[in-house]
Length: 333
Ligand SMILES: Nc1nc2c(c(=O)[nH]1)N[C@H]1C(S)=C(S)[C@@H](COP(=O)(O)O)O[C@H]1N2
Ligand SMILES: [Mo]
Image (cartoon, rainbow, N blue to C red; front, side, top):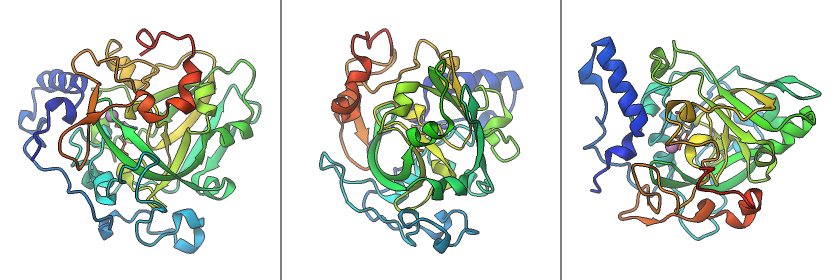
């Protein structure tokens, strides 16, 4: 069994802030953290899902576009374009970062089980000509849902290969027509402390917030994911709709989005607010720029022994490097 380093369990800023909070509250020290340390990772292989993972039971498969209507986990290919195998459905749905619920990656799935991800609306506004609030199920039918097999590389240096289903964010943005002053897109997750125990304390700034430069948001690789393995997203992966930006560290791929605003100024993301010297706005995967407290040169692919090299822009350099021409990637981390 590969020992999991604490840095892979919880980003340090979260750990430290939580300790601060716990000390302040003088409470529940036993509940803290790193409980996952000795436990094993989910095993690789075998894509089949447990019935407990089936989301949104109220929606019948006939009401879903074909790309999301698979009764069992389905992917059109078993590997990414580099030839590396997909992670298993059970791995992807049971090893999660979702701080609204818990910092225990293997505890998210259970804590998120009862979260109500429907009905759900996404409000798109700010500097746009046609602000609009969408029901998420209308989005499923309005835009063609397609499979995208992407690597997800967490800033904590673990990674997976995930067959998302979704649609390009650019299609939604074109529909609301950004005004010429719009330069960034800001995303906000849902705020529901009653259902999300992690939000009951202010150890991070809620709601979880992220941002992209407008050209990054319009890039064809950037998607809003509505599904995974041919099925609707489960709560642990950010149901009913989340961002996926495959060339950036995973924390940019914000879950459970309720609001998207076009803005003029660079948004301050939750991670930047928590530790500005450790988490930048760009967060492009870059093996040459280490995190202040650990190397980013290599990563652990969940389900594999040993480590593999981290690829520039997570292997998407050909598609996205031009977005950063002339930029100092060390300064703009
Ligand atoms: N709202 C919200 N979005 C989030 C997070 C979170 O805690 N809250 N964690 C991020 C991090 S750190 C990662 S690595 C990915 C993990 O996505 P996954 O659990 O679907 O693999 O989600 C990102 N999106
Ligand atoms: Mo992450």
